[in-house]
Length: 285
Figure 1 (tube, rainbow, N blue to C red):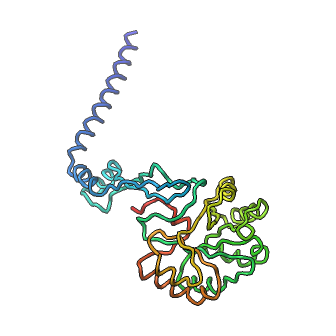
Figure 2: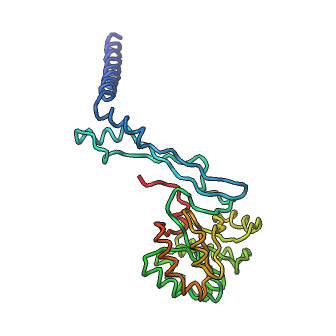
């Protein structure tokens, strides 16, 4: 029995010794110049997240914030023996209202806080996209091609070319009619052959039936913020801004003006990205 209490006393002593050692280390760390500097900078460098803007049945993506991971930053700097802001480690702070997995709203824009726009090319049955692809290649731009059921049947090789070149492919159904068979077939091809994680539908008008079809298949619904008409370059000059999602009919006018359109967008210091990027709410540290 005596031996039992001796062992028990040793264990208790060990636990308390460990506890107070940890306590001492924590106290010392709090008064370390590196820790003090990190905490001072956290007020300066931390960024609040921005919630997605939901207005009725529409949504605009939000933006994650960032927060300095104090302990990880401290441990990294201790190895170097000094404070260095280049060694700060951040963690993302997600918005409470988010576009992620929000399939029952129309996405009408990207975040107004990022200098990004996205270009959609509507690809109908007889649409020839070769010239557009050639120009995008020259500029190193990735865009979005919303393809029609009939076009896909006739252009398997071009579809694979879009996949290889990392363009995003959207589902246009049967000439914007989202019947079960046409929608499901394109969706399956995009998912299995294109290996796209995020998939997208398209509409120019509010259409609850179409929205529900996309919702049931976990596709985001895009309603462009700019629908170009007969003179796309003029429409771009009049309306382009941060977060714009622009759609084009591929025709002779667009083929003539696409270079000027790209150059104008670049002159406004806007980056052209695919839809999965423009709805991405993460932030670069």
